Image 1 (spheres, rainbow, N blue to C red):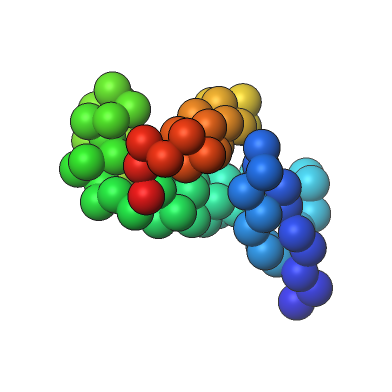
Image 2: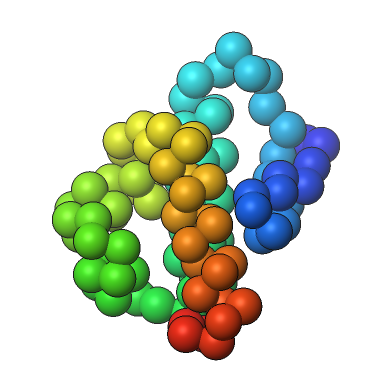
Length: 91
């Protein structure tokens, strides 16, 4: 499969290219990006859910791709993580 770089508010994530009409592939891509953002923060799922104020179960479902996360939420989370990393508050 071909790969592409997906840039989320300064966090670059390499993902497989997918057909934009394939909603399942899009959900998997967003789930993978969310996991990479969490890992970049250096936090566990539990710590990350507390830090974001998102219920653990919701965050787990997003990360595993069992529940669709809106892309704008992913971008907001990436923005928050990047700002906190820049300011040295996490990581």
